[in-house]
Image 1 (tube, rainbow, N blue to C red):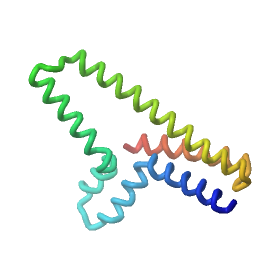
Image 2 (image 1 turned 90 degrees about the vertical axis):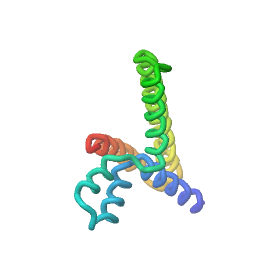
Image 3 (image 1 turned 120 degrees about the vertical axis):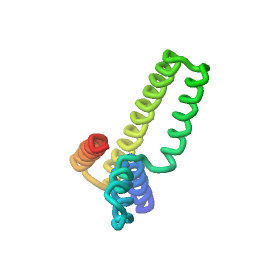
Image 4 (image 1 turned 180 degrees about the vertical axis):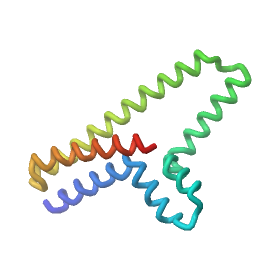
Length: 134
């Protein structure tokens, strides 16, 4: 029974860490205290390297295909709209999974229903704040 509680807590922590780029950026900032302020600011604004790598390559490929005439502005607009829909879907799925973990904590009496709802609200608020900082 305790193992399930700890597993649920571990899952929640994993989701919270992965959905909060600002926490990762803050860790990078601490490690780079001796670095210049420009490098610190850039690390806060950037997504984690494993995420950015794919995005940068994708954007570079789109630009190359546009410059060579393979893709036109309409194609790029459609690609952007499609990617936005995918991102919204991914975020909705992440929120659903996070809420399920918190609901499981409530069901297993790890925390009360009220505290679970407060936790959900707090996470939503902190995610919005981290978006606004980027």
